[in-house]
Image (cartoon, rainbow, N blue to C red; front, side, top):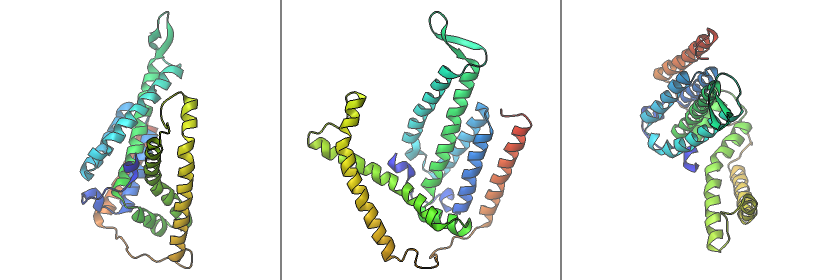
Length: 261
């Protein structure tokens, strides 16, 4: 999971696009995925996201994440099968006609799983093909969002893989000292994570202190910001952004007319 939200260096056509273009694509995919509820439409959206990941050359590195998302999607579907009570009954899980499974529950569960995978994978593709500094640049310079909020959000996002790596290191260090950090019942697991939580808090405070000193030495907040690198928007970027907007509008029109629901 740590590598899933990190930038994957590459020279593909997707990497070369303007970050604003990829952001418009991300918003369009999320909007289309939220508009449709039909499984076939959502499957098409998911396949388009996988196609973009293939063009970017990052699909092999996303395969472990796709497997994890598939398990989570299956859990979502099981929850719908158990709690959704609409439509004709397909079959019963337990003898004596107990725990009925409804047809609409199956359709809803599959749709929710596909939607979740499409939205999450599109966000991961965006992060894997766009450097953090470029994301900050388009959010502040192009979209005119407050720099402080953008910096806060991107810093938190950037440090997720760092903290996941630190958790692994702390667990391995504590295990080498014969401290049990896994296994047992849930209460034992909660108690076993205390030796991991305390060092992690100390490490987090140290990293926050170093980050604050680094920001101060670079004059953060001392005046108007300037940018060393400005990415120009090429004609292909304009064409792709217009295409994404038109596809999103077409999806809304199709849904309003009663299709894809």
